[in-house]
Image 1 (tube, rainbow, N blue to C red):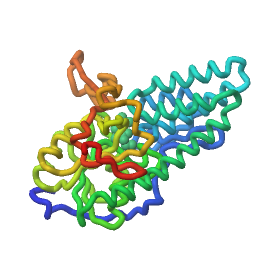
Image 2: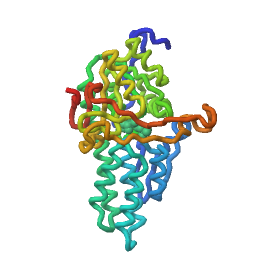
Image 3: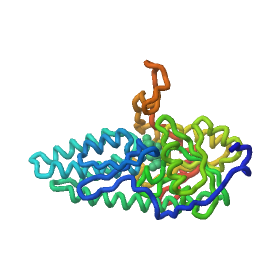
Image 4: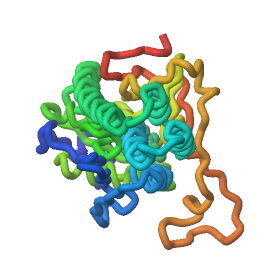
Length: 346
Ligand code: MRU
């Protein structure tokens, strides 16, 4: 496909209804069932997790990822810890230590800390049932939030036919419902034709591996591009708007999301197209005044010097690998949440 002009694009509506979505994590009997996202789309393997330490490892390794899904995984890990420590004399001490370990897994997505802080407040002894109930309520909340973000987003984003660019993965895999940005895209595509450009999202390729996989299951036309192609694709006029998610939104609207989102916001501004951030209230951190105070995770150099077993850079080469960047509120046309639309820059 050569994108010379918008009229050459193939647009289409979704074939998959909104009540069908992949379950990234489930709590069944006394186990966590988790789709291992590091193997997708080549292998679809479900992990059976019985130890909270294994759940922490899964969060660290991005077997489960995406802000709302990480929040649920934190609750699920605490549930396993409570089952393990119940009946022990130093139960509360062990639980707070386990919650410290869960909090040390990934620093940026605020959903994780909201879950652990809420659990710290309810633990008193014999809490497994209470934590299970908390985590199942969180799953219900996030499913409903995704649905409502979709409704608000589809109302806010006008246009009969839309070319949309997205970054990272914000679908069912990253949430426990239809998704944040991808949920809005799926909702729009129920009755309006769209074409989605998917940034591959270096270094871990969440766009190439996960977003294309989800969009293809939804029957939504999409085109994969490498991250450095976004500017030239936008310059063709094929992109009407950029829609992404967020991992933590500060009180002033500055939004941390997958590395590369800030660059897209500058491109969108330059080309006079809107960039929308889609996130549930659980991703808004009103205790953090601006993006400057958001802790940005730096990950291992190994993720940049190659992919899986294939080495691409010379041994010893220095690497910088921040997992997120901050898009200033002034570059965001609107933040679409489950409770409504927020125009942070105005
Ligand atoms: O490092 P990841 O894959 O966990 O990063 C995920 C993102 O940046 C998503 O865009 C974000 O969590 C919001 S969508 C649920």
